[in-house]
Structure formats: C-alpha cells, structure tokens
Image (tube, rainbow, N blue to C red):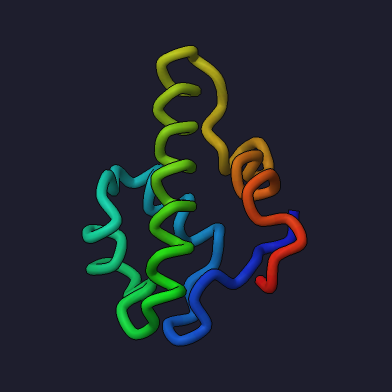
Length: 87
C-alpha cells in the first residue's frame, strides 16, 4: 500500500502513525506530541484523530486474537475509511 500523507504541515504519513501505535502510543494527544499531526489545522486533527482511534482499536483486537498488527496487513481500516478521500 502506498504510504499516504496524513498531515502535510508536519510531514506525517500513515506509516508514521502505525509505527507510533506499534511503539505503544495509546492516545491522539501523545501522537500529536511525538509527530505534530493535526496541531495546526482543525480539519486535519479531526480526520486523523478518528483514523488513529480506528487503527488503535484494530491493533488491539488483532493483538488479543494473536494476529498481525495493521501495519503488516496493509492498513485495512485506513483503506476502508479513507479510500477515495483527498489524501
């Protein structure tokens, strides 16, 4: 899957977000502290916060069910939520 840009202002990509989840980030505020995502643009914050929590929810489910995390599966949630959007 192509590495989509999620926040142009801070050059944050989908892979960056998924790596942060792998590294233990569990809140959008923590993600913002580490990457700057959505700190300058309200629409960017809103869209990416929704995406983050969906990715986090899927990652937790997959871990509990002993499956690979979303970064290893091509970002299933991202593809379903945002395919065709402006990113």
